[in-house]
Length: 184
Image (tube, rainbow, N blue to C red; front, top):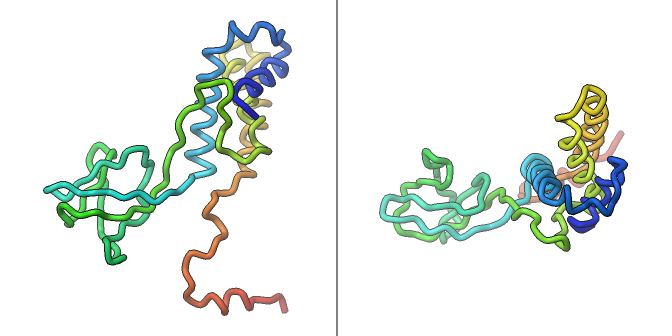
């Protein structure tokens, strides 16, 4: 579902005229991106490999990285690291070397009407629920009660997302013992 269709779905759920989309366009895009950031950061948690080069102090910037999970040198050996004080990079004892990092990353915001969220197709409508929640949460008590329904629906759909790396075999040690498990 594209960003444009998500915003139209939100308008329909709010019982607004779809022709009034221009009134809500900017704020709905902002709300959709807020919900998208929550979905990616808290539930999907995508991972990627990044090549990081350290400077003369052993520090490196980690652009677009939420968290570094593992760091290895060119030989494949683990490298100890710690985040910088501002949290935007890492520091190691290795100076002026290229390291491979496995990281949790963010996806860029949805900007165009044709942009699709990088989420499972079955939870795209959850972003419309999040838009409705944010839109109604600043209204009267009745609207705030209605907003809670949309928040609950958003969270329920988010719980169906499984991280892409979850459930995969990442180490082969004792693989045959694990696959031979049976109920007795």
